[in-house]
Amino acid sequence: MRTAEQSIAGKQPLLGSSRAELAQMASTLKLPAFQGKDAYRWLYSLREANPLNWTSFPKSAREAIAASMAPGVPEVVGEQISGDGTRKFLLSLGDGERVEAVYIPEGKRRTICISSQVGCAVGCAFCLTARLGFRRNLTAGEILGQLYAAESKTGLRDVPYNVVFMGMGEPLLNRTEVEKALGLMEDPDGMGISWRRITVSTSGVADALLDFAKSPVCPRLAISLHAADDLLRERLVPLNRAYPLGRIRKALEALSRRDMEKISLEYVLLAGVNDSDEDARRLGRFAKGLKVKVNLIPFNPAKGLEFQPSSAERTAVFQEIIAGGGVVARVRKSRGLDILAACGQLARKGWEG
Image (cartoon, rainbow, N blue to C red; front, side, top):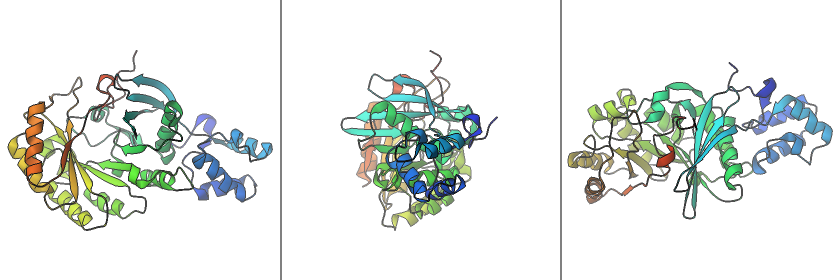
C-alpha cells in the first residue's frame, strides 16, 4: 500500500505544501525564488492545484513542476443529495483509502464538514464512524483537499462558508497535520478563511486541548461531552477512561479565563440513557461558571446502533432545565439524515447504489 504522502505515479502532492516547502521545490527545480511564492498564491489563494494552469509561470517551469509533483486534490468518487439540500461526498485518497465530507446549506449559511482521519479510534458507542476503527491520519493536504473538492462541486469558491472538523476522526489525535491545515486555511495570503468560521470538535483529549488552545491557528472549539457522569460517559465515550470529566472540567476552567470564544459542549440526546432530568441538572452543574454554551444534538439512528433519539418533548424539558440554571443551550437540527450524512453517521455506507 502506498503511504499517505504519495500520489499517482509516486509524485509528491502540492496541496498541503507550506511556503517553505514550495520555496524548496523552486530551489530544487532551479526556478527563481519568487516562483515559490507565486506557487503558494496559485495553490491556495486562487485554488488552482494543477501547476500546468499556473499561467504566470513559463511553460517549461509548469512542466517541470508537473513532472515532479501532483495536485493532491482527492477525487470525488461518489455524491449523494439529501431532500434537505445537504450533499455528501465520498473522496478517494492517493493510497485508495476513502473519507467523507458534507456540504450543509441552511438559509444564507454554508458549512462544510470535513474529516481529519480515516476512521476513528475513540469508539463512541452511538457513532457509526467508530465501527470502522482507526485506519490512519489524514495529511494536511488531504484535509484541505476536502474543501477544494466541495468548493468545486458546490460553487462555494467565492462565497464565505464555515468549516467544521466534525467528520470522521478525532482532530486532536492528528494535531500536527490539523494545525498545518489550519495555518494554510487561515492565512490571508493562503485560503483566507477566518478562524471565526472554523470549529474543531474533540471528544476531550484534555492535555492536547490545552496545548492546542495556545496555538496561533486555534479556531473555535467544541467538546463532545454527551454525559456529565463519569460512569455513563465511559460507556458512551471510552476515551473518558483516559480523560475523565474532572480533567476536562479543569481544562475548560483554564480556557474560560482566556480571551477566547465560548466553547461549545456537544451533547447527543439518547432516549432513556442520558436525557433524564437529573442528567440535565448534572450537565448544568458541569457547565456552570465556564465560558461555554451547550448544543443539544438529536441522535441520528442508523443500522447497527442500539440507541433511539429522545422525543421532542423530552428534549424541550432537558433544554429548559439547563437554561434555567443560567447556561445557554440550543437544540441543533439534524441535516442529511436520509443519506447518512448527519452527526455520527459518516461511515462510508450507502454508496452501493
